Image (cartoon, rainbow, N blue to C red; front, side):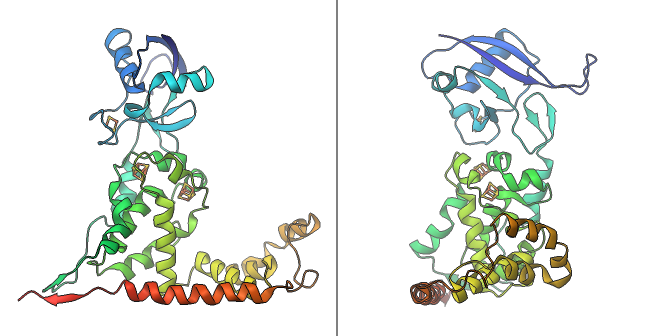
Length: 330
Ligand code: SF4
Ligand code: SF4
Ligand code: FES
């Protein structure tokens, strides 16, 4: 089956110009052929100048992520015929939220710097003389986060990263959870403090793209939510994200609904809230910000508070279950 491909090309050192463009190719696709195999065929038989990264061809090394018809995928685990059948097109582009260096090759330097920033290694207690017993539950808590192959697909599809380049991003935060969630770790609180700073765990807007596009089932958003919960348990609250959560929890407990005006004030403080007044007025005019005096406490507030009571009980139980048994090895 003949499949036409359009591949985004870009070569900043080319004499023809620095603007990206799309180049058309055509391959004879056989059943089971992957996008990577198609690209390798193009390089081998049609155009040796086409540049892209690849190594293992087995979804292990994480180097071949590209956009296929607008969605980030591993080229080596994506079959070309079914993808082509979805839209009748085959457009290959570099992943997003990364600077393109040449054709499909992007700059991973910021990705690795963010990984470094979360200290991707275990920090055990300084004088470790005890054996730490790991239960199946302890291991399961960090199991998904260990599956990351550093392909960058999650960062490519991350909406928060698109807006704020300084955001640590889902890949680095999943890695951070790998160690914060490890019962042998001692530096958890320090890590959580740094992760709660600007452009850390609270920048995520929960679009769920990192879960949807991760080829290894790492579920970075789950890791981020666990980091947030752990930071709150550790009482790391002097940041906008934690203040916003506290205001939200308080509002729903009090009136059974969100009091947007009070939440803004509690999250941002008086001075910064003043700057939000024009937007608040516009929201109120469009019915987007129900005022607590116009929309008082809901009738079944007792049911809402019963849910709170249940959650409080569960939080205490989960905190206890994280305690690990340590015994002397000598
Ligand atoms: S859920 Fe959060 S971290 Fe994941 S892609 Fe969306 S904004 Fe980014
Ligand atoms: S979390 Fe998933 S998508 Fe993100 S870098 Fe790791 S393997 Fe790739
Ligand atoms: S070539 Fe290694 S993951 Fe695709």
